[in-house]
Length: 156
Image 1: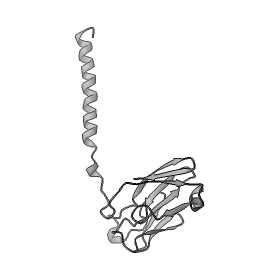
Image 2: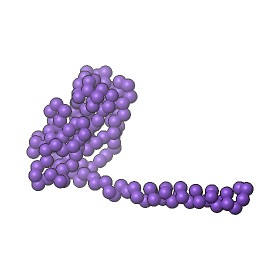
Image 3: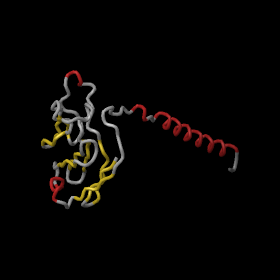
C-alpha cells in the first residue's frame, strides 16, 4: 500500500464485508424451521425412467403417479409443466402413518383416506383444513427432484 490512508480504506472494506457475513450467518437458523412431528425424514435416492410404461402419466403436464416402494407410504410424483417435477411423501402429513393415511391421486390433488384432507400436487398445500386444525395443518412433505432428460431423480 502506498500510504496509510490506502491501508485504512482497505481494512475498513474488509471489516465491513466480514461484519455482514457474520450477521448473515448468525441470522440464518434452521431452528426456525418447523419439522413435521408425524413424518421423520430419512435418506434415499431413486431414478424414475420416464421411458418405462408405468410412468407414462409423467410424460405430460399435470400427470402424476404414486411410487409405492419409497418413503413412508410411497411418493407422489407430479409433472407441473412438462419440465418441472415435484415429489411428495404419500403419507398424510397431519397424523402419524396408519392403515388409512396413504394419500390417493385425484387429478391434480392428493386426498387422505382418513379425513379426506386434500393437498395440491403443485404446491403441497393443505386445501381444506378442518376448523380446529386450520392454523396447524402441515403441507405435504417435499422431496428433491432433478430432471435429467428421460429420467427424474428423487432424493431426500
